[in-house]
Amino acid sequence: MDFRLSEEHQALRDSVRDFAREVVAPVIAEHYEQHTFPYEVIRQMGKMGLFGLPFAEEYGGMGGDYFALCLALEELARVDSSVAITLEAAVSLGAMPIYRFGTEEQKARWLPKLLSGEALAGFGLTEPGTGSDAGGTETRAVLDGDEWVINGSKAFITNSGTDITALVTVTAVTGTRPDGAKELSTIIVPSGTPGFTVAPGYSKVGWTASDTHELTFDDCRVPAENLLGERGRGFAQFLRILDEGRIAIAALAVGLAQGCVDESIKYARERHAFGQPIGNYQAIQFKVADMEMKAHTARLAYYDAAARMLAGEPFKRQAAIAKLHASTIAVDNAREATQIHGGYGFMNEYPVARFWRDSKILEIGEGTSEVQRMIIARDLGM
Image (cartoon, rainbow, N blue to C red; front, side):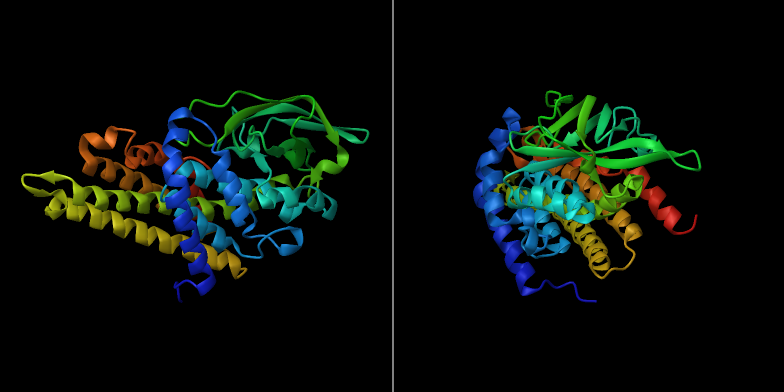
């Protein structure tokens, strides 16, 4: 087993690392403080081809793989998680469902703009009353002639209300299965469709430069051909999407954890106490060493999950392990980096304050830590 990067992956990682440091870092603090969306950064990411990384060239993609996306997410998150989650959600939750399950007509209509970064898409799964219990979906879609009529609401939906958001893919109850369970399907709802309302953005603790909204559907009508994939297969489809997405979130979490190491080393060299840099003290050295150890092992976990996925092997358990471990150590590293910075770690002018505020959601979004433990235990036959 060889975890060394290929020349192509190494070049991509280096390119995104430079972009994050030279383009994202100088502007993101202002966006974070003002809760504004970094359109200028997103445009440049589109020109770099980041939104098309894991997609085939025939649809406007870069012809790369999912591991390439993960490498890009890690490097972006070393500097800022709002930009990283915008890319992650746009690719794994926005474009990927259409790429995986869409008809050729749907792919031709939506993918070129999504893969170029000219447009974004959201994934409407979570509801105000159903988080981890996705099977408890209450949003309903009724087929009326040649149209779906959708009623319900969704919560915490990323990339759903920007000026360049083109659509949201919505999970909805479309009937009852033979065993009495809900029949869930996924339906594409273009932005601006009558009856589709995007609420004002949330006031969030972290990820404040990313776009997140509650959505409501009030007799919202879309053509019957907007059904994504097979009717009644919505549950299976979003489980596949979430399995893949957990690897991407793990990569993002590793990036944040590594960013905490970067900033702690920098600060420990510059900050003097009792006549010498604080990095000369073993207490600080041991903290940083433990942080590096955690980031390294979490990186290996998502590398392993991605390798299994790309090889066509089962990867559900490994993706859950990677997401659980990476999100846990991201919170740990953010806490320790803040401690190393002392009072300055509580000031927003220092990146670690942003990292600390951004880290906690990683244990919640795209499957809580408790859900990851359930997945791991069930896959072990328990």
